[in-house]
Image (tube, rainbow over all chains, first blue to last red; front, side, top):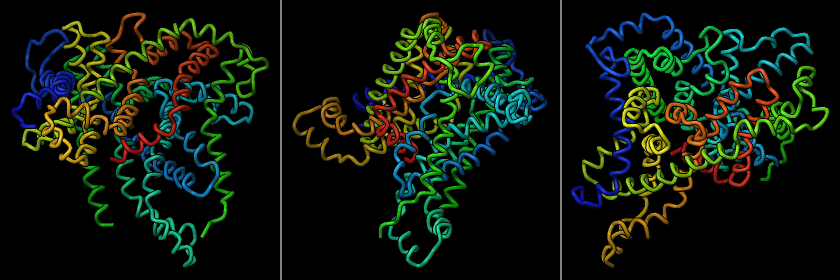
Length: 286
Length: 271
């Protein structure tokens, strides 16, 4: 198919038009508007970096950013540890491995919004009931403080995503040659020695993939945030994605929200790229 | 050497699975209780299986219609993503020019752009052209779904020999015929993967429909669920019945296609 041929462009046109109109043009417009005083209808002046300067002095945005960063770090660690443990269990010689895979993966098929509502009930009502029954106050009043809201989100995300990450680890674990582990067993290696010397190094690439996925998923989290805590109490569990939405559609501050969206894009793109770059480099050394 | 059955791991696995399922257990048992009963005990089974909550939630959610809206949007969007992305990936993989490399790079790079970064101008521009409707939503899903889909198709197409295309050209077939009669059928396994991955996110998507579809009677399940939940915040028995109803279609789908779904997700993630 020559580049200049009719069929080449015929095959590409539908996706090019939609990607252009849905992603590229809005991104460019967003960058443009971020330097203006756009109110969603019209633009009267260029304001240079004024919106950007304002954002870095705004407590609400910086709080949301910091909350997102903390949440992402804790979630990435937990999701990967749990995901790997689940994968090790279901790839070992046990009878229930197929049904276990099916169960652990299930939450990923249900939308984040619905999962958040279910967990809102569990944290506020079921936790409360258990707390009262056991006389343990730590289980009462969940989601009503910043701290319990934070851990609520972490638990929800770990429960949801660990099964997804498990699938990735499984595909790498199944690639570990059996001769290697059997040889180690004959040499008298314990389970943990096998894990450390054979299995972990061979599944290291899985960590690259799953870290990329967990990072982008946790950083861009919106649905679960909205349905579990709605950012409360007092916006203290509001993450960046939600903060941008609020600025744009609740406070109708379009130019300012556009600048936040540009910053968000730069953060997401740069951490994704750096992370892949570092992990790729580390893999080669192994 | 056959290793012996590992009982401690088996039991650990089953206990974890029960923990994994417990949110669903709590949701279902409470959806069958009356408002009063829920206050006395959240964790026990209901005294009597009472489906009144479901009847009420079914009506309030306008369930069949909402389900139909979700199915319509998902099926049309995913179908078009499969058709258009495979065509594009075919053109890009069979033509090794600078233009193809550049366009492929653009498609892949677009994956780095978070939705929130394009959301505001997207909605204002589409609003100006009165495209905040179902057609507009499907068009947007093609734009957001094509990157990963093209990436996956491209990887598979590289391994399909060009001699097939050449033989068909000699037989007098044009590109359109070659693609639909020879190449596309060979892409079936990856089409299933692309279909599954796009179905999962489009079916569950809340934010985009919430911004695009504001007409009553056209809402998808997540959208309707949000409003329903807002109305019944204080009435958990109804809210939980609604949530259970919304999950049932997914569980049925998962039951029939679990092998393909798990395989599709693994392929999509690892590639």
